[in-house]
Structures are given as structure tokens and as C-alpha cells.
Length: 363
Ligand code: PMP
Image (tube, rainbow, N blue to C red; front, side, top):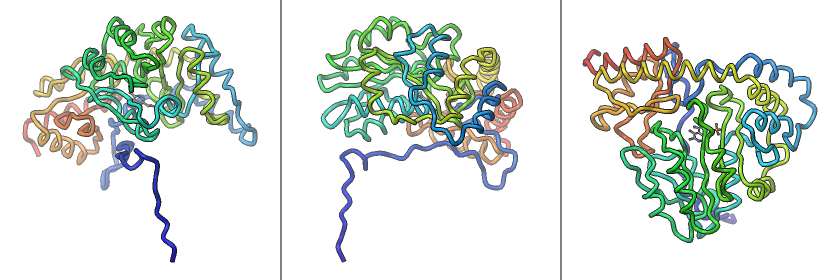
């Protein structure tokens, strides 16, 4: 028999599979999922109704230029619609960036507690991922600058960052942009930007520079994680490159209709942000009272710190046995921490109570 030696492209076998998304616990019926930074209230009615109406167009191919969605995004954020690109989640926009700008011999920079897809996508495009240290769980611009070389093609930072919840200021971000080597692009991942009242996600910096791209998502505050829609904003020259690698029909009629309606329903966004801020403060205080500290968070989650890896794992198991799913973040160099999404009020109370029981040693 002929043997067929399968040889994937360089980098592919370096990829560790993405962990996450589980929503079930064997033997527990009443599960509360606080492990994927989803909006506990889901999308608003307008988005759901628009999605339902899209059923009438199932036989029609969707728009290839996403004009209506881009116009809605541009109108709300005060941006140029021609410089917006939409993808299957912001993950896909990050993928377009790696595919288009980083290949074998190139380096992709991100921080030690940075979002896991940066490493995966760098490997997938054959580039070399380079991880730099953070300072007390905060993006360290000096470390990023020190990590750059003429091989650096992309620098990814999430602001606010997942899973730390921390954020750096506009001056620091601008300093990073101004320190990029020739030909490199700074990607500002704003997946959680809407949780920070008044924050533009870096849009003004995109306008002011030729080497900065911002990515955003409908998966978080818009409550549409299950639909997979994200977008990017950048200089025309860069967006034109990304558009060449985008499949013409990457977004379905339902995705486009729901995202457009969601963008036009800012009341839902404001409500979600208000509840998130209130309950995030409450949960942080409640956990601190139980001896579990966390940094001030700017996202829809907090990063709870435990004494060591063993205690974090034991607490995770304790919560899981009670139907409470949170996220271990060992893969993010934070094995002594658990990331807890801010759920609705009953979920926050339930997880705080259970962590109190765990710390008190109640079995
Ligand atoms: N960036 C960050 C920092 C994230 O946390 C996430 C989702 N976990 C994403 C990007 C990707 O989100 P999506 O593809 O759903 O837009």
C-alpha cells in the first residue's frame, strides 16, 4: 500500500487547540455559564426580530460588501464606512491581518496574558509568535518596544485586556504606535471597549496614524456571541488588503440583519453596560470580603486571584460541582487565577456565595 506522508504547513502543528465554550456539567441540570464573557441578557429585541425576519431570505446570497452594516457602524461611531471590514467574529478580522501581513520569518508580538487567538493565528500563517512580559498583569509598553525587531509585522494588544481586565491609557497606546518598526501594524483589539463608558476603542488613534487598526465585536456587549460578527477599522490601504483575503459571502443574511439592528439599538448597549458596572463592583467587593482579590476590571469579567494553582483548581472544581462554570486561565500564564464573567444578579450572588463557602472550607 502507498504511504501518504501528510506534511502540514510550518507552524500548524505548534497550535494548541483553543479551550473554551463548554456549557454543560455532567449530572448538573442548573448550570450557570460564567466562562465565556457573554452578555447574560443576550441581544436586544430589535436584533432578535431582525434575525427572525432574515428567514425569508434563506435562498438569497447575502450582500458581499456589507454596506448597510458598515453604514450603521460608521454612523454610530463617527467613522468612514469605506474603511470598515466585517468578519465572522473579530477573530476572523484578526485572521485576515495575520494572513495578509505575517508569514514565515515574520514575528507577531503580544503580551504574556494576551488573548489566545493571537498565538494561534500567528502560527496558522507560518509566522513566529513572540510573547512579552506584562507588569503586574498590565500591558507593558516598554517591554513590547524592547521585544520589537525588524521582523515584527504585527503587534496585538487588547484594551481592555482579556483575561486580566486591565487597561492602558491613550498616551501609552500612542507611544506604542510611534515605536513600531517600519512596515509593522499595531492592532488594538477592542472586544470589550463598549464596557468602558465614553471609550472609543482607539478609533481616534486609527484616524491619526497610518499603522494602526482597531477590531471590535458583536459577541460581547451586543450579546451576539452565537452569531459570530466582528469588524475592523483601519487606514484604507490596509483595509483594501484585508478585503482581498475575505471570502465574498463571509457573513450570512441573518448575521448582517441582526448586527445592523443591534448597532442601531444603543439603548440595549447602555443598559448592559450599566448592569455590568454595578454587578462587577458588587462581585469584586464580595470576593474581596471572602479573601479573594482581583484587579479593578474594565471588562465584563473579573480575574479572581487565589493563593496558588492548587487552590484555584480546587475552587474551580468546587464551583463546577455546583453548576457554576468559570474559566481557568493557566494557558494565559495565570494558573493561580480564575476568570469569572459578570452574569446577571442571581448568578453573581450564586458564585460569590459558593466562593465564600469554598474559602470557609464548607464541603
Ligand atoms: N479579542 C478578545 C480580547 C477576546 O476576548 C475575544 C473573545 N473571547 C475576541 C477577540 C474574539 O471575539 P469574537 O471572535 O467573538 O469577536
